[in-house]
Image (cartoon, rainbow, N blue to C red; front, side, top):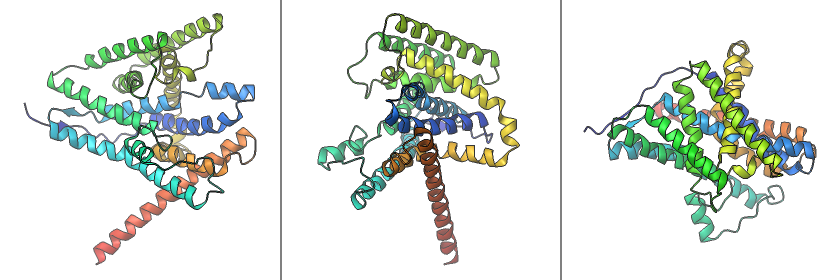
Length: 350
């Protein structure tokens, strides 16, 4: 068996995925801002039903990975692919930790929401993504997704399996999510991969069947019915209908809601493609937010630390912090691009 790693590189841009990622990036900011205003009943409800943002990123990741499918049948190519993924996922987090920790140390009066105690276990957990400095559950999740994807692609390639393999995995993952609905694990740090991966698989399914509108509609409708059935059951029994308790790890309740909402957002993105194309500023803004959504996630935590509640009203706070975050990412991106160009010119001129 030849040891190869192969993939394709089509240049097509998928506006619907850019819309999905951009909307979800703003929703993540929204969740973290309105979380401090949850004493207001209607704001609390907005917070509850906004918990599809990370799920949308996982779906988008599965979709985009399927554009560049990887067939792995050797250890060395596999390690190279995984090393590339690790750099893209972990280095931005380390950069965030360094920047945020430095600002906390230099300007404690401004950046005062976090007060980390620097110990060896704290540093170890931060580096290994198992604790320490906050918000590393996101890179940890995507690292676990990459590891799982790599292992499954190796199996698929080694046994020459067809794409039915993905449907079997999808059904198996849904079965686990049903179990999580009945029995919640004591810790979700690692068990969460079994059902977050459901959404990653769903992203691949969307890509492979993107021309099958009927299937996508059926998927969205079925997911909506499952969610509403469970919601009605919980409500009738006097149990909490909140999405959040079902997020870590995702249960069938969480997955059904996420799948229904994400399918609607994907369909909406498909419908407004022509409108976006006719408005360059809107299109460029959506693409920028989409393509820098990972950076936006980390930067907004720093901005939120500095501003916290700039106006005392959730909506204006959201608008101000979102604008400050996107502007910061734009300046950082523009500055780094200009610096790289300058260094290249100096290098060629030397």
